[in-house]
Length: 261
Image 1 (cartoon, rainbow, N blue to C red):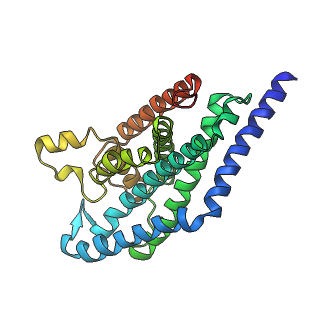
Image 2 (cartoon, one colour; image 1 turned 90 degrees about the vertical axis):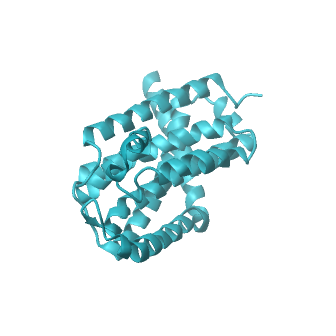
Image 3 (spheres, rainbow, N blue to C red; image 1 turned 90 degrees about the horizontal axis):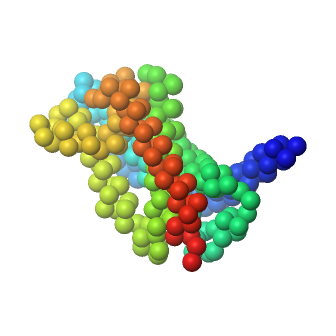
């Protein structure tokens, strides 16, 4: 009986955090959902429709089609990361996180609730950007399982990374440093706008250190059937990063790093 009660309590706790996050995202939809869609639309117009005419083909595909998976993945990564950093740091700043820490909820439930909220926003924005992309280049789907699994895994990985950023952040400026100076360069160099196979020698080897390269290429395979990276390697890298980040997040929560004064 106690096991059933505990499981039910955990489920209620998880639902409460998730519903709170979803409500926040939908309540301020004009700030959380619309701006990234407008930004990606501009990318499609500038890089796809205008510059793409001069580029021609990339990886055997029209340039507009080639950049679609990368831009969808770009929106998923930035929104997964940004949502959880702002939300969890806001809970720290407002002292709401202390209520969670003294509750009987285990750290993995707290983490799962916040990550699920960030994944919800990331996938919602991703689908909206996908609809915009269909207007410019048509709808493509090569492999449904690969497309949605890598999209989900990527959203989880960068939600976990954003959670770590939020834990260590001491002021609001701290939650923008990593996205600006680390995440954004890695994303733009992650094969969003170009094929990694076009890079010369050592530059190509350096690019393969970037985990985003593997996620973008796996997603490109799911949509268009082309990839610079073997699919199994892309999944191994993504799952590996996810596992490391997950256990590190749990460690930080259990130790109360950056949460207990």
